[in-house]
Image 1 (cartoon, rainbow, N blue to C red):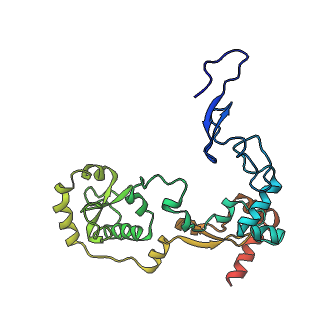
Image 2: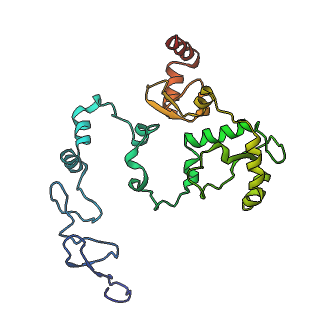
Image 3: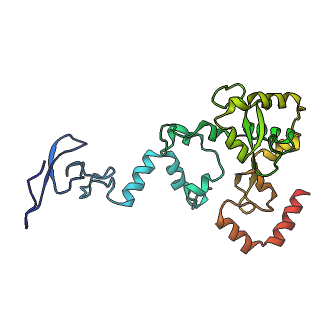
Length: 267
């Protein structure tokens, strides 16, 4: 509730309930959630005018974090000797798996609205299934024999049978136009696809072909940090954490000398 309408020369106030002490208080801001008595520094208890702040200064914030966080305590204790000193959170975790930030633990979690199929397409078992079908069908659409852009199509749909999702006999190669025609009309083409698969020879991928589908685990060529890259990036001569490492490498070492050093390590 408030004092009423806006009037010239009269400050409009709001009667609110404090979220901390659950007591009524008057405020000039409609968004304020804590009363004046509860707006105190968590470390020294000093009175603060702004209800959104937790500490009166950076010194109090550092002291409170030192007492309550083991990670920050170690960083402040080791100083410049700490391995993560000067690194941002994004740079430190780039290329590393953060299992504690997956699924419901991620702040961007929206209740699992993403497609399960779309997530599975980035995994190794799906890539092996798709590559096996392409190799068996000679990388051509089985309907029009086109060798343009091709897709791996499930004979029995992905959602209908969980056990046959990665079965090579449950897939055929289709070009994009043919795939659009088949989608929604799977039952009309099912008999034709099954007959084609039964007549085809089963082909397995070689170890080198499977290896080419696996993600690349390498190290930054400047700082040595472990990185996880896409499989196609094996063709690159150098790998870096970020743009800063790349520019520093180019300035201090150079590409020609860097290749010589890399060949020496491989030998």
